[in-house]
Amino acid sequence: YIQGDGAADLGIIKSAFFPTATAMEVRSDKDSGHQNILVVGDSSLSVISPSGSIKATAELPDIPIAPPILGDFSGDGYTDVIIRTRRGLHGYVLRRRLATHLFTLLMGAVIVALAVALAFSSMQE
Image (cartoon, rainbow, N blue to C red):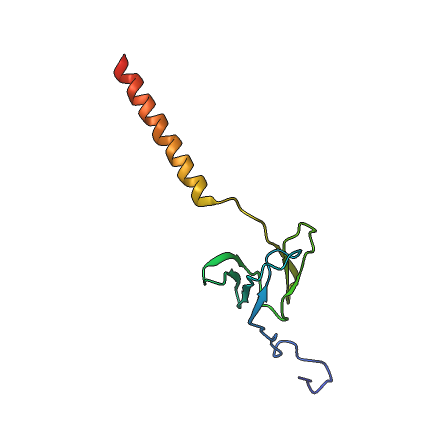
Protein backbone atom coordinates (compact mmCIF):
# COMPACT_ATOMS: atom_id res chain seq x y z
CA TYR A 1 0.00 0.00 0.00
CA ILE A 2 1.31 3.44 -0.86
CA GLN A 3 0.60 6.42 1.38
CA GLY A 4 -0.12 9.86 -0.06
CA ASP A 5 3.56 10.80 0.36
CA GLY A 6 4.68 7.90 -1.86
CA ALA A 7 6.12 5.83 1.03
CA ALA A 8 5.01 2.26 1.43
CA ASP A 9 2.94 1.57 4.55
CA LEU A 10 4.62 -1.66 5.66
CA GLY A 11 2.49 -1.89 8.80
CA ILE A 12 -0.56 -2.82 6.73
CA ILE A 13 1.13 -5.38 4.48
CA LYS A 14 0.98 -8.83 6.05
CA SER A 15 3.35 -11.67 5.25
CA ALA A 16 1.89 -14.47 3.22
CA PHE A 17 1.56 -17.65 5.26
CA PHE A 18 2.48 -20.86 3.43
CA PRO A 19 1.06 -23.95 5.15
CA THR A 20 2.46 -26.96 3.31
CA ALA A 21 2.39 -30.72 3.25
CA THR A 22 5.35 -32.10 1.29
CA ALA A 23 6.35 -35.71 0.61
CA MET A 24 9.95 -36.30 1.65
CA GLU A 25 12.49 -39.06 2.10
CA VAL A 26 14.22 -39.01 5.48
CA ARG A 27 17.36 -40.49 3.94
CA SER A 28 18.52 -38.32 1.07
CA ASP A 29 20.88 -40.90 -0.43
CA LYS A 30 18.45 -43.80 -0.95
CA ASP A 31 14.95 -44.27 -2.20
CA SER A 32 13.23 -46.46 0.37
CA GLY A 33 9.82 -46.07 -1.22
CA HIS A 34 8.46 -44.96 2.17
CA GLN A 35 8.01 -41.23 1.86
CA ASN A 36 7.21 -39.30 4.99
CA ILE A 37 5.19 -36.11 4.96
CA LEU A 38 6.60 -32.79 6.12
CA VAL A 39 3.76 -30.63 7.41
CA VAL A 40 4.50 -26.95 8.05
CA GLY A 41 1.98 -24.85 9.93
CA ASP A 42 2.07 -21.32 11.29
CA SER A 43 3.96 -22.18 14.51
CA SER A 44 5.47 -25.65 14.07
CA LEU A 45 6.56 -28.31 11.63
CA SER A 46 6.18 -32.09 11.86
CA VAL A 47 7.43 -35.14 10.01
CA ILE A 48 4.70 -37.77 9.73
CA SER A 49 5.32 -41.40 8.76
CA PRO A 50 3.32 -43.23 6.08
CA SER A 51 1.35 -44.93 8.89
CA GLY A 52 0.39 -41.53 10.35
CA SER A 53 2.62 -41.41 13.44
CA ILE A 54 4.51 -38.21 14.22
CA LYS A 55 8.25 -38.86 13.88
CA ALA A 56 9.57 -35.36 14.67
CA THR A 57 8.22 -31.96 15.65
CA ALA A 58 9.85 -28.53 15.97
CA GLU A 59 8.53 -25.12 16.94
CA LEU A 60 8.96 -22.29 14.43
CA PRO A 61 10.19 -18.87 15.60
CA ASP A 62 7.87 -17.02 13.22
CA ILE A 63 5.28 -17.62 10.50
CA PRO A 64 6.72 -19.23 7.32
CA ILE A 65 6.54 -16.98 4.27
CA ALA A 66 7.70 -19.49 1.63
CA PRO A 67 7.51 -23.23 1.00
CA PRO A 68 10.17 -25.33 2.78
CA ILE A 69 13.49 -26.10 1.11
CA LEU A 70 14.59 -29.74 1.42
CA GLY A 71 18.08 -31.14 0.95
CA ASP A 72 21.04 -32.74 2.69
CA PHE A 73 22.71 -29.50 3.74
CA SER A 74 24.68 -31.02 6.64
CA GLY A 75 26.13 -33.86 4.54
CA ASP A 76 25.02 -36.61 6.95
CA GLY A 77 22.78 -38.47 4.47
CA TYR A 78 19.51 -37.31 6.06
CA THR A 79 17.17 -34.73 4.56
CA ASP A 80 17.36 -31.32 6.23
CA VAL A 81 14.72 -28.58 6.14
CA ILE A 82 15.10 -24.82 5.68
CA ILE A 83 12.15 -22.59 6.54
CA ARG A 84 12.02 -18.93 5.49
CA THR A 85 10.29 -16.52 7.87
CA ARG A 86 10.20 -12.75 8.21
CA ARG A 87 13.10 -13.06 10.67
CA GLY A 88 15.31 -15.00 8.25
CA LEU A 89 16.19 -18.56 7.29
CA HIS A 90 15.90 -21.32 9.89
CA GLY A 91 17.51 -24.72 9.37
CA TYR A 92 16.33 -27.98 10.91
CA VAL A 93 18.54 -31.06 10.86
CA LEU A 94 16.96 -34.51 11.04
CA ARG A 95 18.93 -36.87 13.23
CA ARG A 96 18.50 -40.57 13.70
CA ARG A 97 17.65 -41.61 17.23
CA LEU A 98 18.34 -45.00 18.68
CA ALA A 99 15.28 -47.05 19.48
CA THR A 100 14.17 -45.07 22.52
CA HIS A 101 11.55 -47.60 23.63
CA LEU A 102 14.12 -50.39 23.69
CA PHE A 103 16.58 -48.18 25.59
CA THR A 104 13.91 -47.27 28.15
CA LEU A 105 12.98 -50.93 28.58
CA LEU A 106 16.61 -51.95 29.06
CA MET A 107 17.26 -49.14 31.55
CA GLY A 108 14.15 -50.17 33.50
CA ALA A 109 15.38 -53.76 33.60
CA VAL A 110 18.79 -52.62 34.90
CA ILE A 111 17.17 -50.51 37.64
CA VAL A 112 14.92 -53.39 38.70
CA ALA A 113 17.91 -55.78 38.74
CA LEU A 114 19.91 -53.34 40.88
CA ALA A 115 16.99 -52.92 43.29
CA VAL A 116 16.59 -56.71 43.61
CA ALA A 117 20.35 -57.14 44.13
CA LEU A 118 20.36 -54.40 46.79
CA ALA A 119 17.34 -55.92 48.57
CA PHE A 120 18.91 -59.41 48.41
CA SER A 121 22.24 -58.17 49.78
CA SER A 122 20.52 -56.32 52.65
CA MET A 123 18.62 -59.53 53.55
CA GLN A 124 21.92 -61.43 53.72
CA GLU A 125 23.32 -59.13 56.43
